[in-house]
Image (cartoon, rainbow, N blue to C red; front, side, top):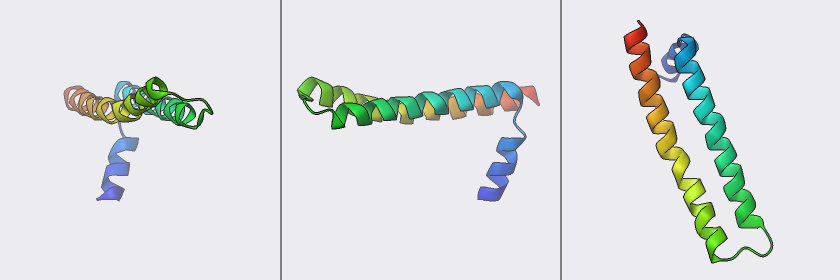
Length: 77
């Protein structure tokens, strides 16, 4: 199953690959910012809530990106 998924990912069209990789990079940046907010020495309630939101958002972004990439792949051929 994993081998089939990886093979399919490497055969993506350029637009789908760009959407997926761009969203993956954005998600990593958001998680890194959330981590920095949590370990900051004088983090208050607002910073912790922002870190929580930054940690939860990438899941939805990746789901939307995967769906968009899949739809684009089906349309592209």
